[in-house]
Length: 420
Ligand code: FIX
Ligand code: ZN
Image 1 (cartoon, rainbow, N blue to C red):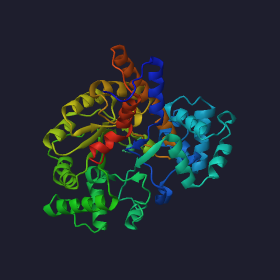
Image 2 (cartoon, protein in one colour):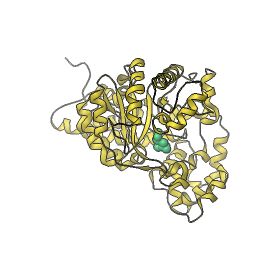
Image 3 (cartoon, helix red, strand yellow):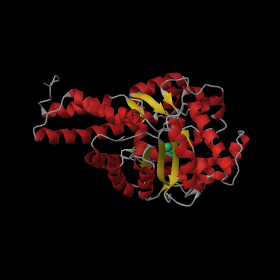
Image 4 (tube, rainbow, N blue to C red):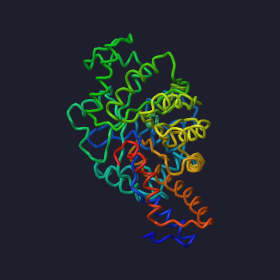
């Protein structure tokens, strides 16, 4: 016999789903945020929010000025410039601009005043630790996975001093982009860190690169290995990517029993003058992921892709391989219309067995808007599905709704890692 009471009222059903979707504690499994121990790497506050690279590229739509003019300004001046263009001269209706307004509102600032200096002053009164606590509480975030790069000269000493794993709310993911996508640079970095590697693909080089990964996974207690790949990534192929993946990365992941996360479909620096804001999306070949999953059945892959055109095929692929976990609506897909579309067909194809969203936040307060917007959409889509079941006579309990949302927003990630 069922112990819990089922929800018999249709209006109550939707309200319950919305409430639970709005309050379930979240594991944000891919961000560019850092724990306070990382000092200047943890970005927060009004000027960082306004100079987010999503907003930089949007502001240049309204400007004829030389790019160099923008980059010559101080951060505060850049923020003023963006504020004027995207919030005063025009209405902030884009996802990233509207998100800034959501943040102001949730932080209790007077959105109607449009007084940027007041907003700055209000936040400058806070300490970083206060702001981290406040934002995590408002956004309902329990656990945050960082993106961690041992080649970063600011980040590396924090780990070497043993301070990287102090705050239990933050987890590490070892980022390996240079090893795959800029081997010349990686060789220099590895050598300067004392690893005996060479540009040539020798047995010694492979062994030393494996030693590097193993040591840093251990040092960081990294949850997974992560890389972003260009859209023209092919696998298997007679190239550096395939050799590095097959002979170094997968063997280490297997030994350490961690997943390998690939974020596929970036075309970097399409407009270099925009710096970080100058990257583009690119359609990819889903059969590379298919081959990875088939050839390495014991290895788990966390996969997200950047092109809208790849999403349906990727979701279908996840039906075929249980070692594939699809995650998030990445970057240009993290807009309401795409999150809605993707969440809907992912649920229709996979039920609740996927990770519908990650934030990719770079500035701490962004957790507020990215998750508020996504929670609302995920809740809505799920409520539609329960309503259909209701019409067919199937009744759910509040506990079942909580279980499903906990799976989507938290547990599926940990279960995939065998840590739940
Ligand atoms: O490669 C990545 O992890 C991307 O998410 C970033 O490089 C990108 O700049 C970003 O911030 C997207 O949201
Ligand atoms: Zn990212």
